[in-house]
Length: 385
Image (cartoon, rainbow, N blue to C red):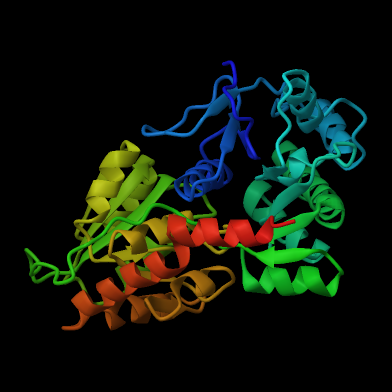
């Protein structure tokens, strides 16, 4: 599409899928636009964006491919570490310059797109924690399995490639936008120009005096794009709930699921309902009907679904790991990540008469720390000249 005057002061790149990094881009774009900034959201030709995008868009084919063959993957990872081809940011910068439109700063949702040859200042989101090589290598088993296999080799190359690529960007960017205090501290120790910018989202106003629950049984929610994704540990949570004597709740699970996962829930006679995958607006509406959000992951670099649940007025249960501890604070309950007993204790600790107050506290925390206005304020401080 042709760009309109005035030229964008802040270009935000790059949306090519529907994961948390994509969410960061369109939430950052809307947060800044709502704060009166001129922005441009850059996305691939075939990116599927959610409904309600109200900022200027530039559809820009990057040539980005997720290689599936092992040799292609190896070549791709080598280029990540020592780029030899024309990068997406260089191509984008050349196009904008040819049209006479040069932004003041590029906000990059991934170190994948950092390019030191582009002279316009670049701020790169820092996602991966722990930041050391051991932290990256620790993820290989979960992503590709520990047994020797093509998927395991690909996962190893992925994580090693990301480590070198991330640190190249962290050290070279004008600013690294660390998503957590703990990551920020690690980066500062290494001399990286870092600032904490908690990713934000839209927070809708909720009634200050929530209506009485329609049932005496707390309503629990688990949601993920793929409930069988090993990173989400949904099976682990179901097994934990199955080992607990308490059954006075109703559990809803949203997302794709396998017959094996459904059979696991049935074997424990859990009072639950699997909805399958739902549109984003339906998930948000369903969230507002629940009381507690259960989160089993221990590897997510952020936790957008936690923020969305808190913004909808749900108390949350999450592992006591970074960055989940920074997100939840006192607006929920944290558990030792490898203890099913601790998980059950965290869930049942929220089953009391103060549940409405805890839900309000979660919403207030989301509004104070993770709303679009809070996000915009942090971004503007971070990218100030």
